[in-house]
Length: 503
Image (cartoon, rainbow, N blue to C red; front, side, top):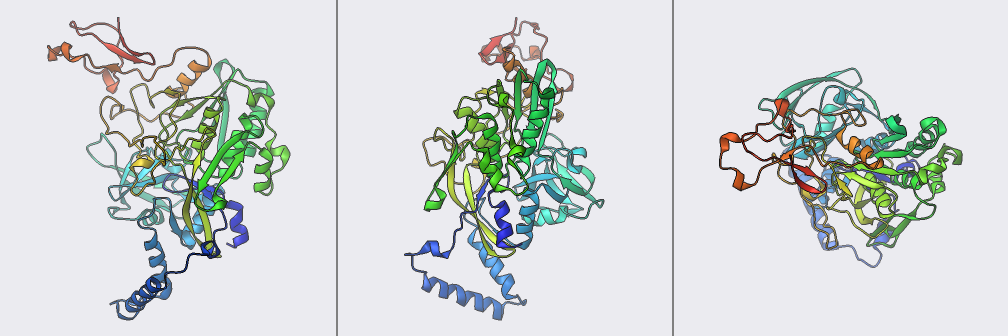
């Protein structure tokens, strides 16, 4: 890949879950005035020479240099990395929306790969892989101690070839053995449909090169070209993608020229402001014309709700934060991931480079969401029985950057029966009839009350005198009650207004 070709996807959000990548043209020239540490470099050269000449096994110069470069990133934040030729090629494939494999976003926990989210309509999703699944073995090989890149290499492969994953799932005593057939993964970035009562639904699974043009086309065709009564923009489990795509999506719903996001860092080129101008998006990608990003006028005025959750990261948080700050939409769901740092890409050769965190990004009101996330206007659990997704946030990652403001970091709370759904709770379809958060978004658009969940709160301590009178959960793990008092035990329901006694 040439440097010129690299520029086509320089504005990318990547990382364990996703993050802003901005090609800022950093080079050694940027270090003018800061003399090179010659003594330390000589020490490095001595170590390099000693290993090459005396190590028990022969190592090439390239192998030694690659490992040395990787070592420079060990103690940096989790989104800075060396991009070897394979990682460099993989980044291009992901941003263009196609790659081979299973179709999962993965992170790391306890030295093993952990599923951040299965990508919709892929082999992994169809096989029943869920967010939070811990991959303990790949084709019988233990993953403990594997790097993410090593695990990815094992899971990648030619389409139509089988692979067996051993999964440890929270709440399950025994590991699950799942056989999956690899396929060519083409991520469908935008999906849309009309819901009952004339409400439009648009889901963005990932921010890619064609996201804004696909969104514009689907909005024009939605509801037969007629203005819907309301719109739900679903960004749940969206790990991010292209920064330009995030700006273009925000531009679809905001007034022209308003601020979408700004970035601030040490070097002058990292201090930038991005405004709602679709024409800027058109200039970023070849093959996209002004007519491709012609949004219907109603998109800027229709009542709107944005859905987010713990898996919404980076580009998703930029869009949600911009629409929230400009009071364009209500944000509903769970606090987002908290990926608020900017990565700059510096090509080293034609097929390798480094990804370096150089700035933080800020919402239009100057909020940094780094390690805090976007706080929804209305908090609603993943399901009626509680939260389903057990995904570490940015603040849980080792060496993560601090927020840089007084905003508190939000560490993923310990799982407990008060916040998490029962172990046997089933994964729901985003946008389906069993989507609890979507139902609450519709309620909000139609002026009806919303619910955080349908879990009955525990009775106060003074009412625990007769333990045998405690109300057991309903069959299937559901803790929804019929609203009646049993054996003198009072019941309470959590509502947006607080804890209400069930009569």
